[in-house]
Image (cartoon, rainbow, N blue to C red):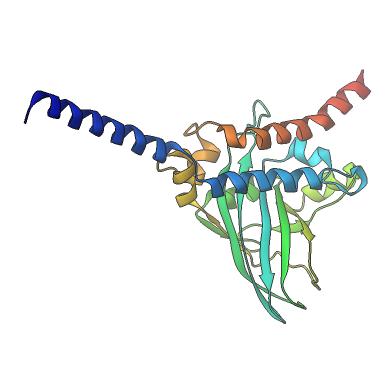
Length: 242
């Protein structure tokens, strides 16, 4: 093979390797959309002061999980399934870390009419609540206690409830549904999505507990929003103390 032909082959090989690397490192659009939807759900949950998640909870919680558009359906017995993200606060700095991908599913028993799409937020208030999300699979209500979360500025009630519940649940429905039950839902680490988003094999436990990854550009707005919401209560209380 002539030198010119060899050079052309090598050049093509280099282009192929660079293209392959860019494909591996680029996060799939579906995962970017999932993170964007999680921010939308969080923003809407915090929009009305009297009907929002208490800012004190976000200032004191260990972690948060957001599942946009959880699908539920059926009459009498209904299955549910959704994809979302989990983020953990640094216990020393108070800063929020990068998201880990997660799924929620399982059946629910109760009065159910028709199909429904629900936005779901879970706030982990203590180590017991967080531990379930660090395992590969946890059943809410069995491996982790769940209670309906308080709304608005009832901080005293929120503090009292946090002593009894490891996880607070919040939901917003866009369809017809009778009877909301979180107990029995199964939360699973979505490590295939973790690997696709961060470009390397990594588990949700690695992401939430270690320094395995950093905040990516497409998740920056979600992390910044959590930082802002969780610091509002701290700023107000510090002003009152002065």
